[in-house]
Length: 186
Image (cartoon, rainbow, N blue to C red; front, side, top):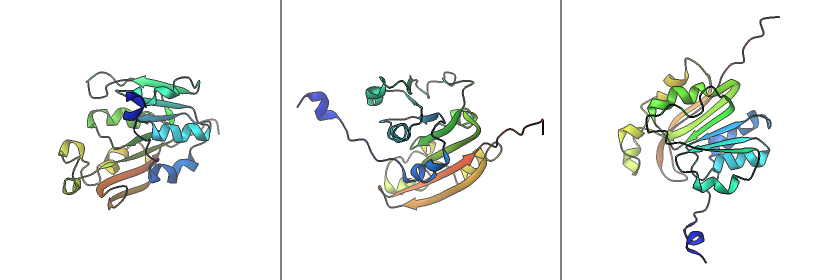
């Protein structure tokens, strides 16, 4: 076994939250997986037939997908203070899990196309009782996702709870849609 293969980590299963709402994403809709890590959600949607964009500071864990013409890999340090790397682009589904960097929340929400879906799930205050992350900079405040999404997106589901699996954690998760632009000719 080579050193590289011995260091390979298994790809975790997609989030149950993402799976729950996946049927609302048309197979033709382009999906953005923000801070994708191993690409578990991008891989899930690609297997469904969706074109996907995988965005992360380190795309080495998704490099095996580079040969797929319907996969775009974007390497960008989202916390470096640079402009959002996907300006002007919108997506039929934007997924963020286990990641929070408040300065780009407006960009993430803005990346949801009319009729598109935002699926966001990350750690919340109270998680410090269970371990990492425990830094308040990486923990959502009470109902923070509701407040952030409310002005632009219609919330279809929200949870702020403690879960036991895959490990005990305090999390918030939201599913929200951007309303389609009304046809002015009718």
